[in-house]
Length: 121
Length: 86
Length: 190
Image (cartoon, rainbow over all chains, first blue to last red; front, top):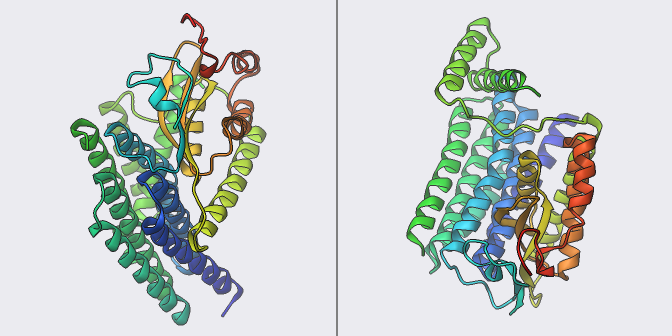
C-alpha cells in the first residue's frame, strides 16, 4: 500500500464510522430535533470524508471532479435540507422531548409578532 | 484496499439496517424523512466506497444524481409537511 | 460586485458544474456548458445565491477555518455522546439570537453554518428593520448567553469577511441593540 492508499483508507474508515454512529444516534436520541443533530449532520460529514477518500483512489481526473462536485453540493444542500425539515417539523407541532428546557420560538408566536421573553418549560 | 473496503461495506450495512429500524419504528413524518435521508447518505457512501475499491468511476454519475435527487425529495416532503401539518 | 460581474460569476460556476458532470475538460463541453448556463440565466433571471457585495479574502479564509474547527469539535462531541452509554441527559432548547440583518448574504451564511454544525440547528429566521432573529435549536443548552456567544463568534468573523467597513460600523452599533427578550425591539412598544 502506498501513502495515498493509507490516507484514503483512513478517510474511508472514519467516514463510515461517522455514518454508523449517526445511524445509532438515530435510534437513541429522544426527539426528532435531537435525532437530526445526531444523524443527518454527522452522516453528511462522514460522506464528505468518504468522498475525499474515494477521490484519492480513482485514477481518472474526471471521476475526481465528479466526486468533489458531489461533496461540494452535499456541503451546500445539507444545511438547507436540515433547516427545512426542522422548520416543517416545528411548524407541524412535533413534540419537543421532555429534556427541552426553553422554547423562545413558542413565545415568539406563529407569525413572530410578539416579542415576549422566553418561557421556561 | 480489499480488506479496508470490505470493512467499510460491513459498516455501511450496519448503518443501513439501523436506518431501516428507525424507519419502521413508530414516529412522526419528520422522523421518517430523517431516516430516509440518512439511508440515502449511506447509499451514496456505498457507491463512493465501490469506486475506491475498484479504482474506476463507472457509478459516479449515479452517485451525483442520487445525492441531488435526495435533496429534492427532502425539500419536497418538508414543504408537503408544512402545508399539511403532522 | 455589480450585477453583471455577479451573473458572470454564476455563469462560470454553472460551466464548472457542467464540465465536472461530464468529467472531461474539452472545448465541446465548455461551449455546451456556456450554452446551458446562459439558458438557465435567461430562464431564471433571479436564480443564484445572494452574493455579498464585499469580500475580504483573508477574513473569508479565517471564517472558513473557524467554522471548520467548530464543525469538527461539535461532530466529535455529538459522536462521543452517541456511543457512550446512558445516563447522559440531553438539555435541549430553542433560543432566539439577534444577528445583524443588513446583509441577506451574511444572514443566509450564518443560518447555514449553524445548521451544518451538529448540536445547533436554525429552525426559523425572522426579519425586522435592523436585525434578523435566528431561532436556534441547541442540543447542549448551557444558558442563553452561551448560545448567543457562540453565534456571535461566528457572526463577528462573517461580518469581517463579507461586510464593507462602513456597513460593519453599522453592524457594531446594531448588534448591541436590545435583544428580543429585553422586550423592546425598535418600532414596537415594550
